[in-house]
Length: 141
Image 1 (cartoon, one colour):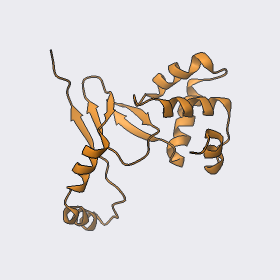
Image 2 (cartoon, helix red, strand yellow):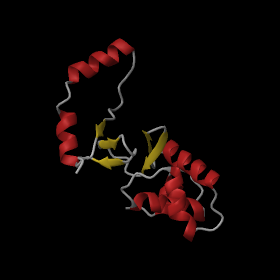
Image 3 (cartoon, one colour):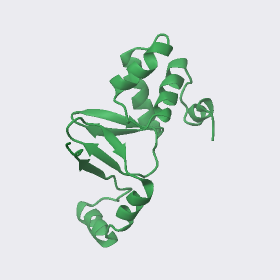
């Protein structure tokens, strides 16, 4: 696995202390943090980190494919796992959780290819991928 500085170089991203800290914190968590949560995670150990730097850096990561943006309750959460996988979205608090990979594959492999092709034809587009986010509620009790 390439180092953070090698990943940045391969994506033509300047490797600053702040960007490195943000990326490494994002990779290390599976909580799908918001920009604000990521800021609070990294700020205590990173000098000269502003919220603007966090937002701009996350935009750069998403634009270059090092992270993905996940809409949630009017804000966005971020995921450094850019592999094809599904998420559970909890409406009550906006948190996001990964669906176990084997179950996600079962679901997506069962999607009717003919229907996807028809959607593409009718919309006049090429479907590049499918993003599924399942809405969930935690059991009370």
